[in-house]
Length: 178
Length: 177
Image 1 (cartoon, one colour):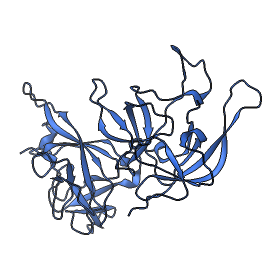
Image 2 (cartoon, chains in turn brown, green):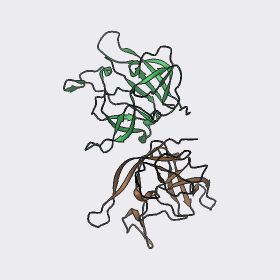
Image 3 (spheres, one colour):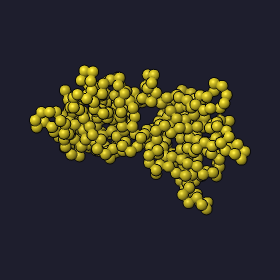
Image 4 (cartoon, helix red, strand yellow):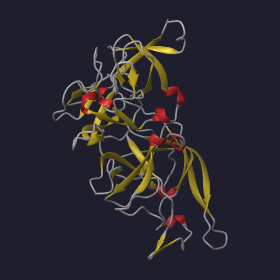
């Protein structure tokens, strides 16, 4: 199974330190997964680590996005497998996340969404959704993304003629409140 | 005809890369012009260039043109020092930034549609690349508040003509209905 891959093409968090946090989750998290960071970890040694939770109604307008260096584990080793699509942030491992801000541009692989893209051009955070969900309109009271273009990631796998994988350029929209 | 001149005195885009984009338009655009960036250019070699279009429905999500003023004189640039003669011609790639609340921008009188009169607000309107003076802030659009009347010093070579009226404008938070 291929996991999500993202590239923050132009995001405010690149320049603003406060829009970046360290997190830990009780469940596996894919790159590009929307997260709620509502409480600090209570584990010793994690005083500045936030507990990442799956977004829930009421806080869907305050989500962060998982984005961590992709170093795939192969048994006890890392760096042997160059295919970043095999990388998932495993439960209880500290990882990085950034806050989504209006006009941020993020290139997200097709796997970073909950289902395949059809004709929909919006992607919304949903209650209990660990990934963005395609939709025909922008949902209210949540962080939503607007599809801007279809592009690709070049990912070397060693096989012939299979280096390009579909990705979507998404722009963060202003939250529409009801 | 003099075109708009602007100076982003204090804008968030100075420090935040994501608030800056390369654009191209099918229309001439003056400095300080506002527009939407909804689609990427489909021209070969412009994979990261956005197509600037006149504001229509998304009046809150507009960007502002700000490009180095190097006036064309026939086939040459740099011969004419008067930046008021500079306009971003259609089909040429240029720079834009996203105005954010609290940003301060010094804008020449030519950068607005109409004369200021007694107005102290300037709003984005549909089908207009320039800001429009108004007596109040318009809802659901990018608006500016006049903070002071100042000037640009622009050397023209003539005597006692170096100062041209400009307005220090502050970007306001949106009023969303």
